[in-house]
Image (cartoon, rainbow, N blue to C red; front, side, top):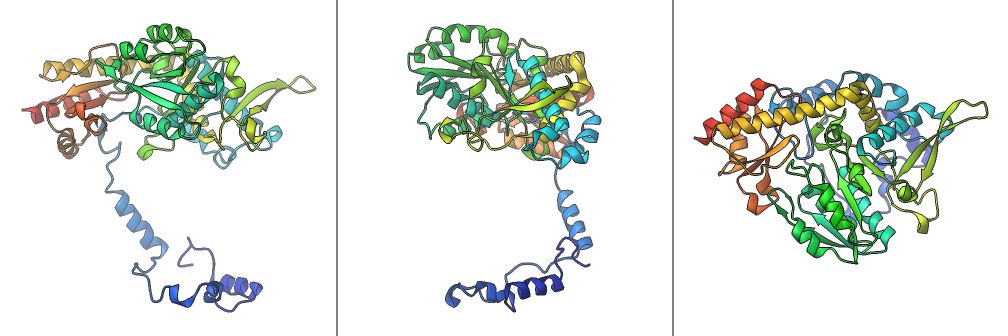
Amino acid sequence: MEFRYLPMTERDKSEMLKRIGVEHSDDLFSDIPENVRFKGDLDIQEPKNEYQLMRELTELASRNVNLKSHTSFLGAGVYDHYIPSIVDHVISRSEFYTAYTPYQPEISQGELQAIFEFQTMICELTGMDVANSSMYDGGTALAEAVNLSAGQTKKKKVLVSKAIHPESLAVIHSYVKGPGVEVVEIEHQDGKTDLEQLERELDENTASVVVQYPNFFGQIEPLDEIRSLVDTQKKAMMITSSNPLALGYITPPGEFGADIVVGDAQVFGIPAQYGGPHCGYFATTKKLMRKVPGRLVGQTVDEEGRRGFVLTLQAREQHIRRDKATSNICSNQALNALASSVAMSSLGKQGLKKVAWMNIQKASYMKEQLKLNGFDIAYNGAFFNEIVVDLKRNVSEVNRELLTRGIIGGYDLGQVDEQLEGFMLVAVTEIRSKKEIDTFVKEMGDLHE
């Protein structure tokens, strides 16, 4: 067939029209007045056969800059990490790859076990009691946490650090419109949340305080101090958005008394792939278990004492009374959660800790080399794998120059904050070699002169 991607033949078309009692396709539009119908041919190309189409799409795709052809120092929420080869082998199995969600959980034991393992590993990383089966991404998970805190505390004011990811902040503003929650943005000082402003804004109407750890600039927020401030207000919660890879090395938020910990599991087994899809996680205390959006998978035993898995809780409106639903989240990211589970299992506890440590060490090396070559580093607190560099010139122009030299530069912070015009957020992950870092510093130095 010339158009294999269009499976319907002319014979199929004729048989369908005959079955519904019309002779031509035009008869299907008879209810539309003649004077508003389009006449003539659309100004589009003639259809291509499969071979021609594949050549055209391949040629277009080859124009893209990708992580195989270029060395990337771009992070800001999407990172270039090592993905064990076993990840693709497992998630490509048909029973996982084609499955949507376990609507018949009693016969989906493999899927449920994979989700259960994901939940368990997220709990271990975050130091929390309960984690759900995954969410769309870190941004929506954080917004869900904000609404949960307002619903649980019956308060309508949330303090959100401006040192969180700006896109997550935008999602929060969208989510709170429905329940009418007030968002008060807390500025950042020296790359971290301004604790003095936070203390001033905290009052009896505060439902929660939202921070990111490590934050958008890579800095490690003082969660112990923030928790102490939050505790001055009755019922107020501390919500933390965390890079789960960083939690393999730094102290988890649960040990600081966080009420809800969310984040994005893209760092485990999920390629950058132009920004999505991702896999959000949502972990909390046992007290809030029945308020968690999405689903929770539990472990049990059958009548013969054999281990089995069940959907323990489903808190969306399709499964319970609408007025009792905690969220309108209608799905999860089971396949990406599986990829993350396989990646975490492949690395193991010690391997994950080592990868996190390598991120810290390599970013520290980058920082020192940039300083030695005359660059100013904006913030000097403890950090994970991202640093902010003051280029004192247009970051977009620098990135365009770097691109011609085979390098994907850092994130232009001027896009989200006028006061950070000329500042670049540089990410260094475990797969960046010393040679790649040295080359980046050299090219930056050449452009700086």
